[in-house]
Image 1 (cartoon, one colour):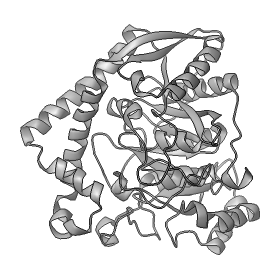
Image 2 (spheres, one colour):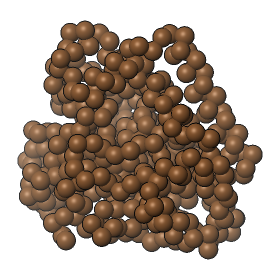
Image 3 (cartoon, helix red, strand yellow):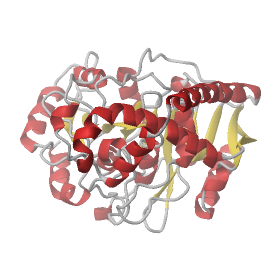
Image 4 (cartoon, one colour):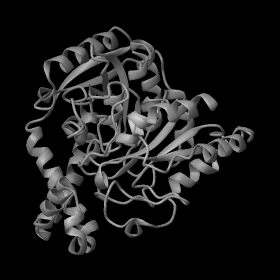
Length: 414
């Protein structure tokens, strides 16, 4: 633990993963000493260090949501997912930086792989903290692509559950229809330990090493979002997987992914406005630019249109499950984002390759797959069938064995 605390003290001023004032070295060290002597059979996360995204309530810390609005507006009971982790022995290192209200206005966090680039968002600090080695695991949230994209940009394991398998109580909502609580983790073993604690009704499932599993390759307007560099690296990974017990199956996923994303944005912005309506009247001038635009976009969505969009979202969820069954797709494999982590901190990158899996509620896991000449990580997302999170983890372990586990350096190691 001493090594980790020294690491945070030395490099956190550059990375800025934690909300200022929430990492207190002595407090963390004292908590770790108490945790580390707990019985691992009754406290499976004893000695495990944890970051918590700053839209998630935890006793003893303010929830500020990356915003200038009064923090008292967001106070409430500790999230049950946090309680489960603490009861299992996890030690909180600090609250992690989020874009304002988990929308799009970036915080001050830098990508620890290359400080000149964004860590992604909205779970910016969670991804950066795990990548930098400041904590073993960190809680994040995803409405469109806010766990998987930053995990990919920072080169860590990212996990978004099947919708509803991790409770969202104690989390400031963005869109109640689409919000997921998920995780960033240093490796798959730590992720698995944490999932067994936090995911509803987690159970062991069999995995047949001799079975030929079908990998869905999503073609059409979806894959055309990716730039040539991302596509080339993705195809190389597919070739490695096809030489194993996996076989690729090309499927045209969606006719017009941009129209689809526009509809999803309209729905989640309408629900965002519902959350903020009472505050918006009094604190309108205190919202940041992109938050203001998103809430205003939701304000103009009529009730009839909202009902229509909700029905359409439910239909998309059913359609995706039917498509996977019809085409006998065991899991999809796709790039995490259209590009590597963009230069600068003014935006958090493009979420469009992640949002369809949030919209349809499927479980997703991000795996690092390589590193560019600028030390920016490549990654893939693997997407399982609805409710089959346990099997998705088994696939992730198998796929990582095939493509190899990466040790990605941080900026201070280059």
